[in-house]
Image (tube, rainbow, N blue to C red; front, top):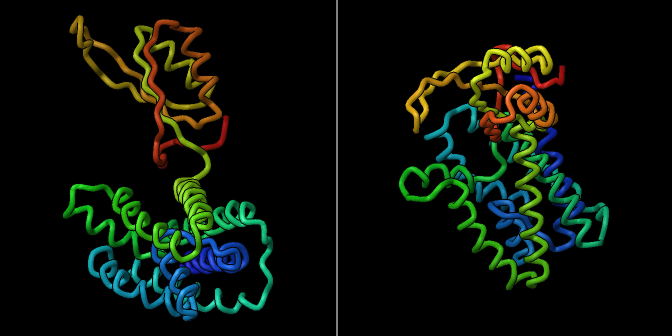
Amino acid sequence: MIRRYILLMIGATLAAVAIEFFLVQNSIIDGGIIGISLLLNQITGINFGILVFIINLPFLYFGYKHIGKNFFISSLFSIILLAIIEPNLQPFSPVTSEPLLATVFGGILLGAGVGIVIRSGGALDGTEILSILLSKKVPFSVGETVMFFNFFIFGWAGFVLGWEQAMYSILTYYIASKTIDAVTQGLNDTKAAIIVSDEYEEMAEAINNRLGRTVTKLYGKGGYLNNDKEVIYVVIIRLEISKLKEIVHEIDPGAFTTIMDAQEAQGGKFKSAIH
């Protein structure tokens, strides 16, 4: 629990630094509740911390009702920290006044902060909470619902901040979302490979000996000849793809191989380190 709250503090601090040192002083916003709060701050002059806290409250309530108490407490703690830290950074000058640099590094820092909070069981932005709940009632995914909200936020930003700043804001949102994915899913870029080959015994042994990866044998049936097939399933990391292809080509050049993204791999004997 101590580790989780330390990470929540780090995440909220990174987000506050990104917002104040890179984004807000260059009239650039992010999407979601943070973006709405930054826009309202520009229009009304109301403290960003107060806005982000008040606007997130109803979403936190829904999160408490539908996701759980621990999520609610972690999110509330992170949002309060963000609301306290960001205004106290206002007396300091921005790190850069170059819009492109502010967009790139602000997006990376903000995404890292939000990602750390999500990975630690909380949230800094209520938009995704609402999107999760709506996705159960409407025929749209969470990502599509988030983009729907952000379409209006960035359109509003175009009228308030100018269309050039709105375009920088869209780029910031894109960079932040990719950074969030990297933080929440990890940087190992895990891949899953499925190999169909008549030389499955030799193939499995070579993968185990040369890559240090254990394999799982699945039983299948050919769709054309209706003959039995043994299929090899193995989880690797991105840097091992070329070595796996080399092994497959050496043993059976005609083997059918599919390599796909795996969201996460844990348990068993899987380790992300290269053997």
